[in-house]
Length: 263
Ligand SMILES: NC(=O)c1ccc[n+]([C@@H]2O[C@H](COP(=O)([O-])OP(=O)(O)OC[C@H]3O[C@@H](n4cnc5c(N)ncnc54)[C@H](OP(=O)(O)O)[C@@H]3O)[C@@H](O)[C@H]2O)c1
Image (cartoon, rainbow, N blue to C red; front, side, top):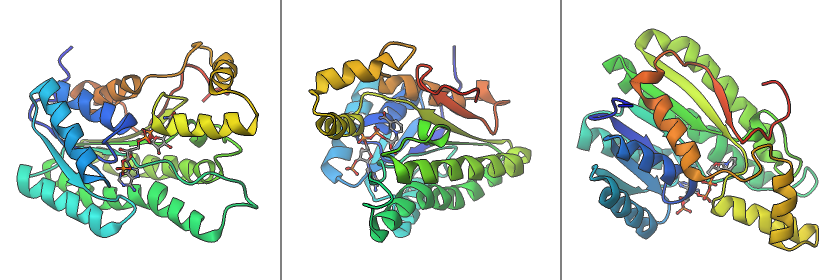
């Protein structure tokens, strides 16, 4: 299927590794020009080279911290200057701090809010005017299964992600008239560095080896395995395409069936 992404410009944030990288790769494979960013300059430049080598698409790497407004303004301005506009915005960030209500200090909450919630607000605020002007746009935010099914040790995530679903739904209502769709993806356990770190600390708490913990975790997933980053990237590439033009305001679980409710 031709997704019709040739000639489109995509900004995928937090994308030197994991889900962001898999998304940038999936979009580049479909012919999109991709702007990627993360905090560590050498890592994001290495990823840009790798994606360009695999796909032949133009990939621009920028060092930026999406929890900071000046950095967000910078990446959007550079993308606009180099490529004229942004058609596809994939909002992604690193995972927020973990911990419980009694252990998490005030400044960790503030960090989490800037990283997980305000990054999405700010990126949308900077990019939506371009999409409105060109009468076409796709906004896709990578959230988490916690947006639909809270997880006890991911308190900040479980608190803020549902807010992103609310934000996206409002934007999807308001901007559909400009041919802009706004959707979110809610990944379950997907094999990335972040997932590995979570599994390390959870297995240590349960006095299990990583292998034992993984076997236990997978028992709860109807698919019988963890997800692969490209299984998130490919879904996002589809949602970004012309083929998905009538999918708007959706919060899509990509979790192998892990969330138990009717969502
Ligand atoms: N993997 C899962 O199972 C899963 C499930 C549900 C939700 N999620 C969520 O999906 C998102 C991505 O997770 P992941 O598993 O792909 O994580 P990951 O493998 O740890 O990759 C995180 C990426 O984000 C970049 N990053 C982190 N903080 C950043 C910041 N402040 N500004 C810019 N870039 C930043 C990192 O590079 P630098 O460190 O160089 O900045 C890296 O490229 C997270 O919010 C996570 O909570 C993941």
